[in-house]
Image 1 (tube, rainbow, N blue to C red):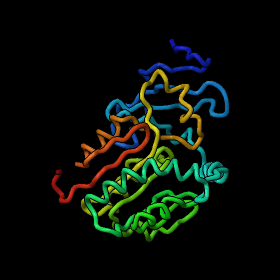
Image 2 (cartoon, one colour):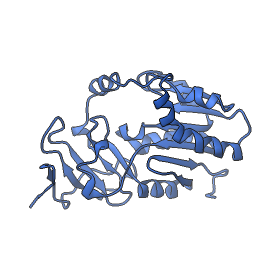
Image 3 (cartoon, rainbow, N blue to C red):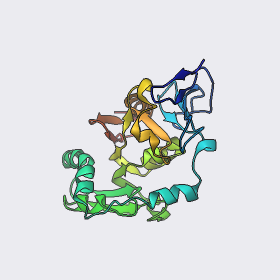
Length: 243
């Protein structure tokens, strides 16, 4: 039988097999939750038994038009002190690592900069250059034909339908020894997933666990630096051999 969650929503049985994991391609995904009421009624969440990613399959995702409409509601602005403070949680550890591994100015890319690009100016204040790319607001695909010393990806990976493909593309865009800086909240326990506020955003479809990043880093031979709550830094090896 299905277990009833404290909020009255339905936690589905975990033995139901699902689609392949969009990050590690493992076929061992199981239905861990299905929304029983509200705007996302019927949405299913699949848990990868290998890398621990929880994802929403294509049938339950928004259309591109619906997704863009949600993003247009965001009020992030470079002039917003609170937003800059939020981003500084990623900027500070990234700048500290660049200081040790790269000479100024390091060349970077803000992947998924959104309608109010802010990280580029913040990093410029530390002597680094950063270009802006966004699928909807700064679509310059030619930027993905270059390699960079660092790539920032803040509040982006949770929106990815195919995180494995996109994150591989970002690795390909990094120079050897380059840094991939990711900001996304991490889920911690399945029993708390139903009530997790981060899950309620309809554009959030890929949810990473700490172990997800460990698995992905190991698979690609990356140095992994986990920071509290939502920041992860990954360094590409200097050579083709794992460090």
